[in-house]
Image 1: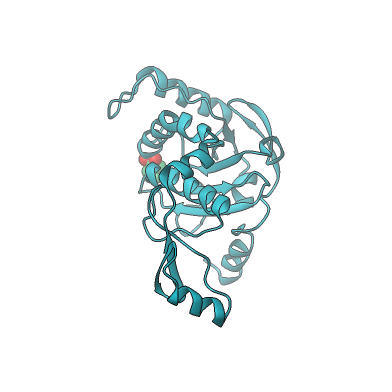
Image 2 (image 1 turned 60 degrees about the horizontal axis):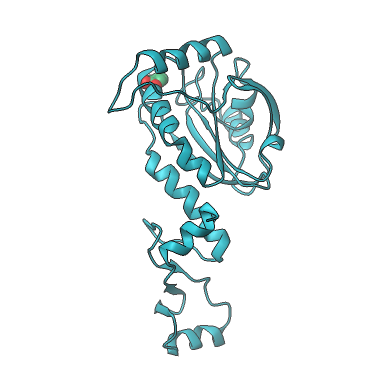
Length: 239
Ligand code: BEZ
């Protein structure tokens, strides 16, 4: 690709910490005004390359089957591809009526699927990545928080289906990090120890290394503490 075009594409890609670009769109559940309609909820906005394709079908069946879990964590799902509305409707009907896969059958996709024939939304979100495909969106996943800020972006290529346990783990990790003012170490899962913000002064660093309190300090800049699994689920599921 021409270097200038490549630069322009890269510049138009939203980044973590940016407000989610706004758009109005037609979906399989009616019109949406994004992200305004979702204020107060987490949203996962995700794209897929094309309707009536096998990897995407396996992903939609998995996401639809897990939707309740995401909703219980105050998160709505919104899908997108550059196909039209009638293609979306026909594909979702086929999934419900005909496809049986890994024990999933009769799967009804009730979250909205955006039609984006003009690629307006896909371009705004950097979902078209020309080195991978010029006429299809890659498998992008945007986590948008209740204030409309992009908090995580994950991209997968056309040939690799997403890991939905990881997509759920990220949602729980983001919410728990916000709620408890901590960071999560590699492979964190609810119940695992969490990372305490790094000491911001020599005094705090010394105190941490010398104290026998609730923290375990591997070094002055790397301290962890317990965060009970119950507390995490209580905060995330508001129970
Ligand atoms: C699929 O979902 O199976 C797929 C879509 C586009 C390109 C390759 C695979």
